[in-house]
Length: 229
Ligand code: NI
Ligand code: MN
Image (cartoon, rainbow, N blue to C red; front, side, top):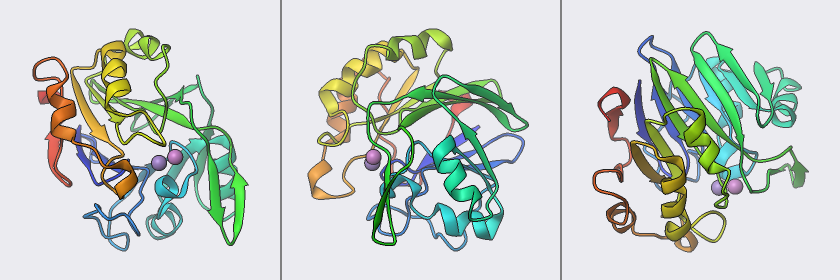
């Protein structure tokens, strides 16, 4: 599979079978995004939690593309009521889809959604382990460091881990460095930083603090082939 990062936690996956997956498609209002919400392709949308910088443009993209939304059961129900295609899951659960296997992991974080002047609490925040094409990636979502991240690396060999480093709302670089040592991924890609001043971080410096060659600070829109990591 091929993967690219599009600012904040937005990640695009293209499987070898041609399935386009968007994770946390926050495009409108994302100062780092290079995507166009009116044309971006999506067959599937994974959501780690409900915060607006993660749900982002999900509704309009799913309406236009008929993409399947995979999220916690509460977010899935919210979008199902709007007539969208959904698949609800919960932490610890895994499901084999025709495009790959999804396992939902815990994350220590909130999951509210500000919409139409209301704040809705939509379940708990999660991370996602996705396997396809013989490769596995872990998108940690927004989370604090927790020692059970060791179980994620024990569950499967993680080819690529996407870890937040922005601090304040999530792990900062120091804790993400410890997380990387727990997960033992072949490559670690920092996410959730530099979208706004409060979460400014030096991604290159973070990567240099990881064991040799492990850190990979992707440029926005840069595509990497996970089979080569
Ligand atoms: Ni969040
Ligand atoms: Mn966030």
